[in-house]
Length: 140
Image 1: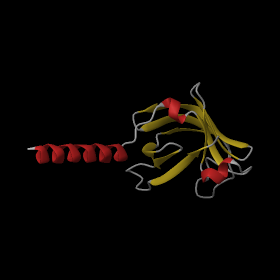
Image 2 (image 1 turned 90 degrees about the horizontal axis):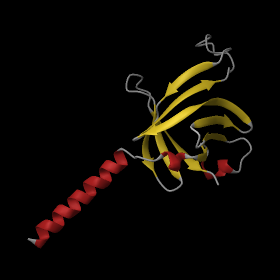
Image 3 (image 1 turned 180 degrees about the vertical axis):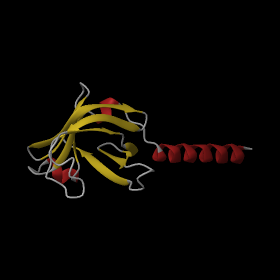
């Protein structure tokens, strides 16, 4: 009887760990701060890609000293919901309409894993079939 209870306990613990790995849920307080797209080395680099989640619900995304995107964010379960404004970038021959104007974007990256100082998000949609995962590292 004890072996059966132990087996049930182990199976339920493993299924709970697997479900956490599939849907990492983090709090807004966890996300607040500066995160590097370029690993720990990016935290000390003057040209690193970064995102700053502020406790007032605003965010900033950039590279080095250049801010490329500003907006508002919130976290819901395993998803970061952001409404952003992206600055004009170089004209893209593939899509000439967005090259010279600011553009609004609603983005919802899903958090797929979270650790003490890193988290991974899945970006893209099932419709696009171009999902990719990006890992961010907390900067001091």
